[in-house]
Image: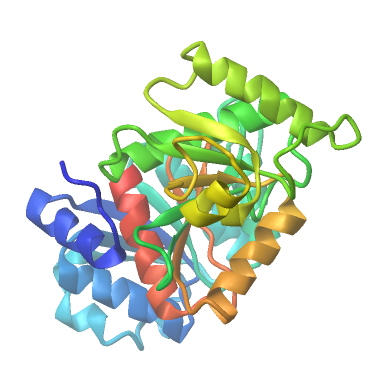
Length: 301
């Protein structure tokens, strides 16, 4: 499989491979979710279980056009809808969950419920973003921008393992991972930089399989070879990073928002860790972003 370098290639791959997954959408009452669902149906890589207010869902034109590929579960209470959708995932009846217009905390409460949720004991919940940036030569993945405030070493290792699993499904056999810091120096004042040194050592011992991991380094060094040469930094990751691991949620989220606002990036994002991938878009995400996230989740499922 050739590496998928943009979202158009991702959609084409799903179609050519004949991949189709069943997706449960919770409270899909907004135009952006409608766009994502309708386009996924037209592209042929998803069938849907729409869990929510039947009267609102009836306004979807796609309901009549793709009636044989959409099931509606009429539940007006959003918390009950979330619990029902999670139960479908837990019972193996759907392959992906997607958030519509429901508060993120409400959906996460159902996902994380110790008795009825879908996060296995001892498993980490983390978020992975993929971005298609006009100024970069391929998709760039980064983590975590939405869930873990200040990852511990153990959490960061598990995060990288989850991320690499998804990145490899994009056809990248030897992912290049950059551990992001504001400098390339390890300094005890910044514990994450010390953790990075440990992670690089773990990678050299084979902990992450066929992957190249470098750091600490800044984003420019990771994604621009000229910057690395000026700084005399020698790493196979420099200028060609596939995956960026950020030190904390503030830096990761700021990077995400900057890319989408000023960098005009197209993005996709999923939660990893639960029994099935979860598309958990922001309320401000575009229909295109939600569609890309569906495609990413189908590939990852």
